[in-house]
Length: 74
Image (spheres, rainbow, N blue to C red):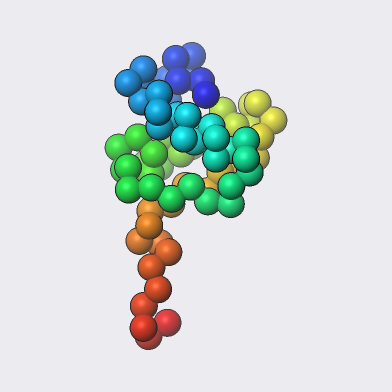
């Protein structure tokens, strides 16, 4: 997923890139992760989505699990 040529993440983040690529090609509505270093990171999300668009895929929504928490008062 462009990890070497696009410089979104380094070589050690291959499994993170694979996770994002699989969610992208399977058209997941959201990718939810606690990985704030390599996945749920605004700079990297922009990079992943840039690569997706360049390759004809739609942008992917990457979020923290906290964004899906439901509270009693809601």
